[in-house]
Image (cartoon, rainbow, N blue to C red; front, side, top):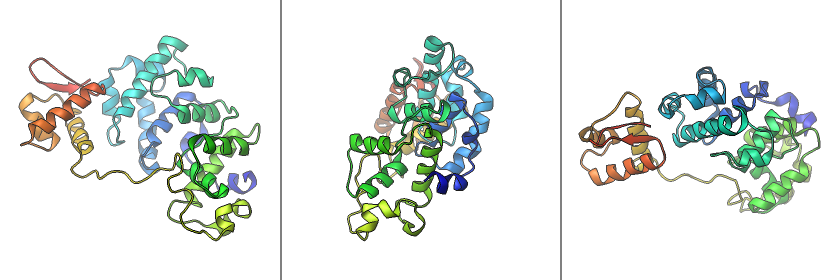
Length: 280
């Protein structure tokens, strides 16, 4: 795998750093966002917030503004909360242990393992949707979250976590993809149960843990309204009467009120006593 994959690795800028904060930012951006978009935005975000302390000292609204175009604005709030916790608990740095990373707000098992593997080169197997897809196909059946992690842990060669995880993710992203599979060039083809069995339906990756499924319709959804409203608030506050139109539902104040309540609850916006909404 390493011999096959290292020469084929995609040249991504976050692969040229071992700075834990820069890697955390890349991981937060890459969650359900296309790599091409992250390539455009990662350098600029880091120039504005180069470390946890700088991010923590900024109003959360500024972080949300800098997140424009990256979707899922809650991730910007979570990143800000993580930065504040790093300042409060770890002297402004991301910690290196799995337990300490998992104790930070907004960091789950995947992100904690990714930071450990990519920043600290610790022996952690990182399971994203691409790795999970490969694991399910090689094993030949749908896997639970525990099983998928155990398979990835068993494959990990000691001392090679950085390279191994990158190669395995690129294999899933470019060779063993969701809609196609180029088994003739795959270094795991000779060990892949699904390939050896003739690719019999159903695909074992379908429904397997960590393998992303189709998203609910975006057009006309509450998610679309949330995004429209936050985008408008990046330009400045809105009075109560302007909010329904900004959300895209000028005649549905009940739905708009629900969207606003959710955004306030998620820490993205705040509403003054007079009904004026602004970024948090």
